[in-house]
Image (tube, rainbow, N blue to C red; front, top):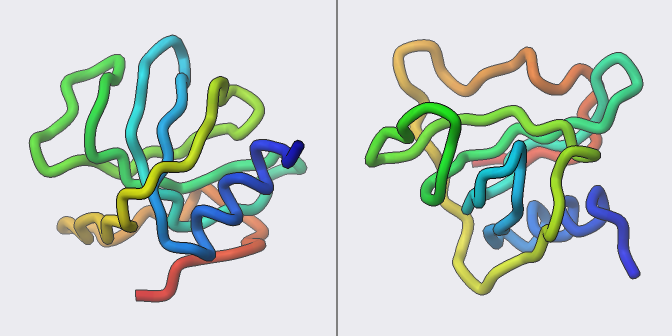
Length: 104
């Protein structure tokens, strides 16, 4: 059975979305960058639906997930959603050493 890191990597490479629990909230998201920061596996994702500790904007929001904190992770048949650059662009501090990245 593939690890959560491998599932996210495959979703990124295949440009599909994912669903998982994170901090007790069900989240629908698309991984855009995976790698490590300070030795910890991280993923920068565009969360477009589901729940969050704070209200999720209707269009979605960038989220940084520590991969070991994801549970019940699965991929879906929904295609990748690009996310919004916003006034500051795509966050760059989530992943220090990039393994894979969606190039738009």
